[in-house]
Image 1 (tube, rainbow, N blue to C red):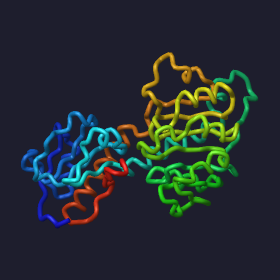
Image 2: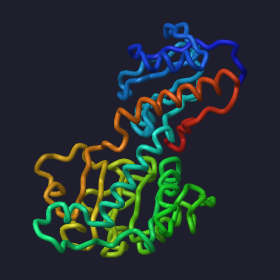
Image 3: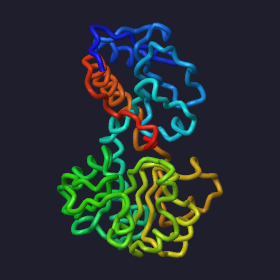
Image 4: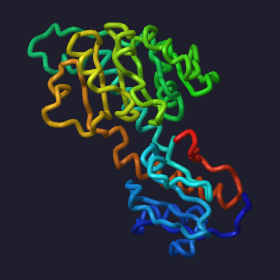
Length: 305
């Protein structure tokens, strides 16, 4: 990638003040789309994406971390570089994952509904095995947060390369070893064709009956019907979900009434944390783009993320 002395950036579909400030802070200049070298696209719906893009646009920054809908829509092409916000929101989402983990470990849903002293205290985390399936940016942030809590961490990554803070790291093809080994399983993997229903009836049956499943990735990673059945049959300790399939859940869905389920409405990355993190990602990537360095969050259309 050649270095640029200046970079014209279009922020669309509408100019957003704090994003324009981030562009200017990195040395970029706001420009119309047909005069832009780069595009920061703030809309989450792939159907609204401008097509075709001017040939001059050589880099597109998307604002979402998960890009499965963009890949499925055929927006991600090889004519230019596309980057996602993968990793930019890692700390905020990892904090929420830790909150859900602690809530499950201490059985806070039960304790919060108790009307008398002596509610079951739960497992606690110390000395337990926490599996992090998808130890990318979010997973690694969570593992670092778990370090003071004296847990054994089992990590799963695409290739199985060692992850700092994990006692063991497994490649994706050995994920089956996780289910019977963990007291808590955290799903932080991307949503791809290969991870759809990563957790289904077979995987749930292999988990320990006291284990908790935590999903802060995408709802499609879990077979919702299978999870609902496992919880209703008391074959699982519980599930803490920030994402569901479908999303949002219908008002009459049995998971809402399931005492072993803790559901938050996709709030792991609130706006107060999202905007500063996204602005920092754009500043960093624009600086890298202008100096000819590798961009963060580069999307691989073949991998799907």
